[in-house]
Length: 294
Length: 321
Image (cartoon, rainbow over all chains, first blue to last red; front, side):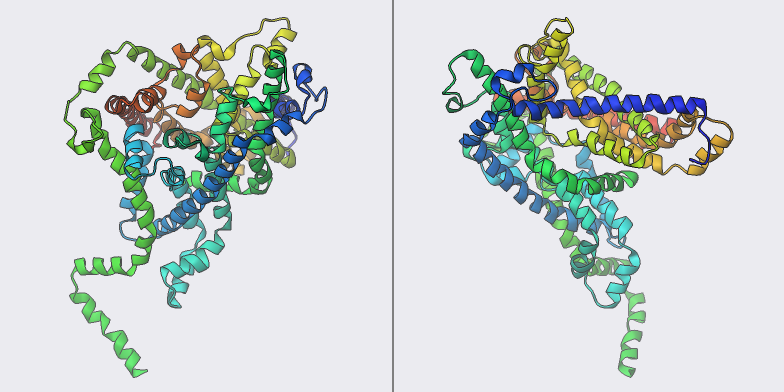
């Protein structure tokens, strides 16, 4: 297309387009950037900080790292995210593979049973009662089992297997006496690294960010995930007293509280910030695989 | 060799004698491993999705914990009537509809427009850079988003209010003002999810044949005209599918974010069906009543989904099924 000369209208179009996109970028980046600079600013200077930290200070982080609740939340969130994702993958991938096989009788019926749940559900209370009946309240299981398979992720995985595992490969393997399970383990999984990466990202992020399950199924504070700890500090303003002891005036306390909140946001997002650049190439692919044939 | 030949010959006549039923059983048996693959996931769906659907009957019963779901006495539509007659009913329904419609009208076209614009960027690496940045907010948790809103919009310390004051205006208590709740909710949703939403449209745009664009350029079409006449029709089917999906959820907005953004002051506009279900059901322990409200909501969603799907099928030949 670059073979053609751009007309006057096109040149103006490109200019305006760039201008709008730049504005959009700033609107998206600035709040994130502000959280970062505010978290390393001296409490007294947060008021005047807009473009860079007026007075650099790590006091906020020092206070946060002393907080016991934060560490409990961090530990729990890691356990839920890792255990949960392993369960998610263990259930989703084999099921999606089987459902991608055209020679499996009844697969459309099973698909229908699964996709129907995307549009209709029992609702909050009946689901809660089911989990309660199973004796999962106030346990690790309530955090990982009720979301063991995501219908949307299952569809993405199924579409991926359908479009990347050639039928000839299966036929050749069958000729050599390979069973379905063996084929899945030896051939399908090694060929599906991109998909596995996407599934880890989607499921892992969902576990890391989820607070609803914890809100309804957990009473025991020792089991609280990071997001519930965050909620009590960010939204309910329950900053522990021990973080505030050496501050005298109300104004100082208010500003120190703000600082702690900004720092908490960064610490909570840290694992994702580290993972993001590595997985970024995969997730675009993942959404596209799932979307095109949906 | 001879033996092998005999064995190979044998199945053929046998095959003809077997009934279709037996053949089917044979096929099922042959792929038993595939069924074992699906079994755990299927069990999960039965236990955590279909058992709760069975449990929905408590909407028509007076659920008593010691009697269990099936033994509790039937009361018919009593809970529904109580909901319809309650003084909160109109307010909650209107809040839900207004917030969803605002979200749909402003939030739905945003990724389409952004994708069309990104698609026109000629510098490949810049385009990739922009994409990396705009996808990022999608991965921020709802708790953090709500927390950021409280921080940024705080009347004393929030930077937005500092900006407003710097420009000569007066600080606004955004999170405590029912008049601001919807705008804050919808704008922050757009901030968080527009970038992510572009992925699917960008994929649809790359599948449009470049020849269409080339011949349009030969005919003297400029970029804007090509967007209107080639790109937009090209992504229409994708847009329609996504529109059907999002209208199907019109009555069940994200509970999480609305609940986190609620303050006693903004309740007049922020109380919606899902937060009401949570509060009456789990907090207030009115299991049957809350299930009835939830069921009413699900049914409306389902009816909307079916009708929008039907309309889309008739008008644009695109539909979910």
